[in-house]
View (cartoon, rainbow, N blue to C red):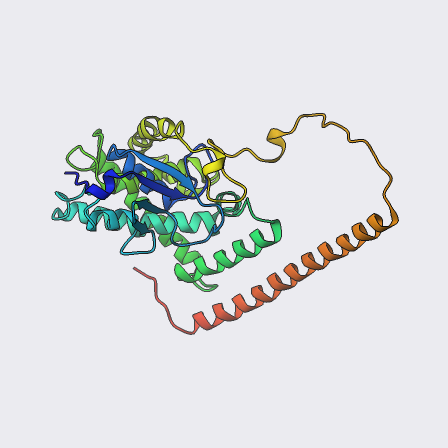
Length: 332
């Protein structure tokens, strides 16, 4: 069932995006890998990369001189399997139903999460997961850039937006129904033992329940399947809450700002209701001049960002119009 090479025994480190929403990582790509390692009962270190929020190499694992990146050979889990470091799937690869179910989760449910995170909600969850540690103007620019990229990836334009939305939710609902029937009252989806399919599904369920807002359409569709919700709740307790107790301290986070050993608390959560007053000192003429120039500089930056967003928005419209002429057909 499980294969572990000598390299895996040296000690493995999983690098993910930061913890939030009471999860060890708020990233929908990172969470399944974390759960996969937990299902395998593999001891590993958890580290955070807060420097490159949009990098497609995250998550990745390191052990000795070995590194497996998210953007290589089908992702981290597949790299670990192909390289003989960790494999929970050997006996399932020849089972058509298992292969079909994994393909469904990797396409229909992955598309649904992508749509909800970037287009179907107000974007608050996405900004907290990816951009909350960046300066506001940079975070906003990266957010709108990602929204444009997601529209292209999902094949959404002005003409088909409503039809694509209906199709995405319809496929997700079909996937939930199939998974709910398959799971029944078992502990795992196939042969009552874990595989990468369970890791993908649990990662999706926990992300949808914990990260997406209560107004989420996808979340409401998931809540209609009580056994899937119980399945997620069971492993939230057994894998996630237990795992977060061993999260690394801020000194080990791969960022100049660090990451806390639990869901990061920012802003007013760490402020007292009555902050201490500072003793006032009279500013010199040079200090006043410097402060005034600083305000002008910040104002100029804000104007530049707004102009950039405006021009990018016009460019997006032009590209969408070009897409309309290509004649894409997403009907089933």
